[in-house]
Image (tube, rainbow, N blue to C red; front, top):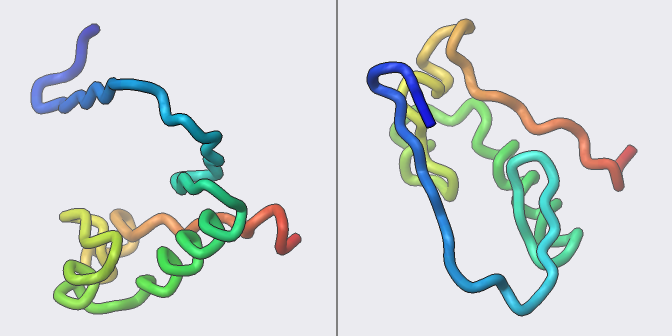
Length: 84
């Protein structure tokens, strides 16, 4: 595996979960309701000042908060397939 200088890789491993997990966009949960709750919490963080976002559930990714400018803004979650 190769990457550009400064690239970080993360390898996560272990025993498989004993239950089925759902993944949608960047969210993982055991039920559709958990995934939708995670999406709602992500969207609720939109527009928070950096200090509040840093303390929120998903935290602040440096260079991607509301104060980072349009070219580095946060990525909004797409609409849930269940709400379409």
